[in-house]
Length: 224
Image (tube, helix red, strand yellow):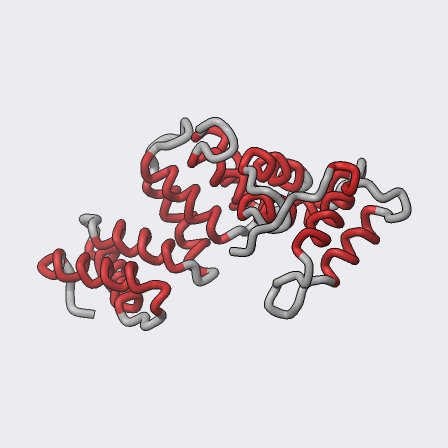
């Protein structure tokens, strides 16, 4: 990761640029691969757009990402959480999910599973697949003040899995295979069998876990 110095505070204000103009200029710096030609200038422009009284949520989210990774600015997870919150409060789904992650991990903010659950649920209600999977896990484990409810967990995992989110397939398949209901066991086995055939290297861990679960519970299921 390239090292970049944070622009001086006085560079973050440019009365000649509106928030929208600054955002448009910042995004124009990015190539097709999502990498800006000038990290520091992109950060400066996103600051103008994010800090405006009518701050643009996408700029706030991008600036949070910059602070989280130390790109164009000095790495600062507290500032990352601040800009995630600004964007999340405007309804930005990815910011809501990432803010929930910060609360869950205690990264840049105090550890707070109740706040994590709140922001995961808001993102999940908006259709964010990762948040749907996460809120399902919260119901499975009874985190953040939520009750343990495997039925609700399964609902969220199904919604997430329907969008192709691999961890949700894993969680749903495992829960069904471990159940005592034959139809659920068969459904779970089918889900895990499909997951076990995935060749994408990014999901090797899930493929191996699916195989392990299937082998461990082969005596409980019918061959599918």
